Length: 99
Image (spheres, helix red, strand yellow):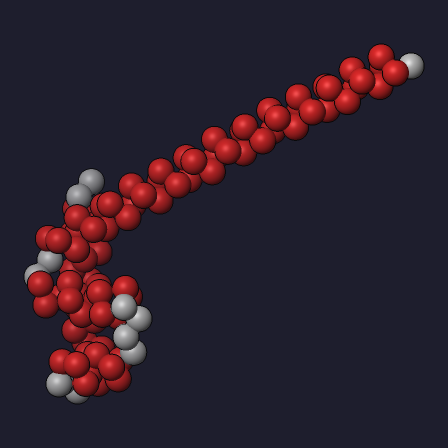
């Protein structure tokens, strides 16, 4: 009886190891995909104008609020929003063109 129990337990452990390795492979492929997209985005950011890149990084990397960007650049709220909108449009276009 112990022999059968041990073999069943070994099989379960082996099955769990196979499932775990498959999960790890999926996780690593998702990480690679994410890194590829991040790398492509970094390239797109490098290809747009420095002022556009700066305002996007202030908003999305440094988590500045519209008010903080407004104060830092000494421009109005509507100007900040418009510059962000135009910068996003530019980086999206460059990102899509990188294919």
